Image 1: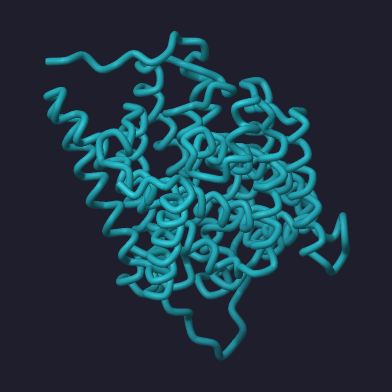
Image 2: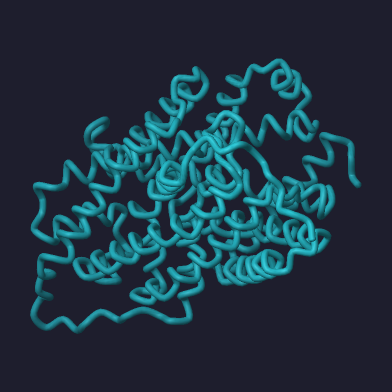
Length: 411
């Protein structure tokens, strides 16, 4: 039986890898995703969280194999998967900037959160283009520590303080629809997005060995899942399912409901740090995708020439312009659903490609993990609203055909 491939020499030890993974995951999920997850499922989102964690676990193990979708599945599946990931990253960038504006807009432009969203997007784009914003292990420890402290304080406040009494004459709110827990799981899967920073880091990111990566995966997923579960319980306790589903800033509303208005500045600071840092990572991932596509001549040849010359700042500006155009057009909930569907399609192909490679290597257990990941990714994607599925289908078809048209390679 073939031995699993060794990718790089170990440079980052297990605790550092865990911090890198958590830092990439806890930027968006805690500050926004629990609200759209509660929209249909209510308290049943707690049952959807383990499904999302299992899907993320399978995807992490599959992507740690570094299997090429194009090599093992073909050119068109590679285009479809790449289009799905790029659109998902673009939607996530829109959601991150919008959520930053909701939490921190009063400090930059009172009563105009959209201005704050454009401002943080501009800073992130210029920081990436200039090379000033580089995430190393030390910065990951700092940012992850700040966000984690804020989340622990919010959880403690929500669980320690009794929830506000319901007004007289009102009935208890419904617990939610258990049939929507799959949709909640699809949304919560985005809360684990960013794990490729650990499982398949780019050349300019901290590197670590294959074995260290495999050992870190269950640790990261376990910690993040427990953190999301405690946070969801606290938010549901203080806000209830209906109010949580409608809240654009659930953490801020929860601490206010828990008589912790004094904590609001700390929550907003933690949200700003977490959301802005994740926005930088998302934009950098979009830039790398465009550079790789340009080198493969899947996008404009002018970008290919720039990428081969090693100048990536024009690509940063193009990516930033793409997100800026989408920012006023996409509703937050629609963007979350579209991002979830597109990213699940991408990881369905990633699991499938890993399965094909592992069959050739006769590695049975990892192959079954990839098969299960493929199945659960498809099921979660299919649970999203029909309009989201139709939009995803149109976007993937258009992106794939555009790549074929530009590259003049249809097969």
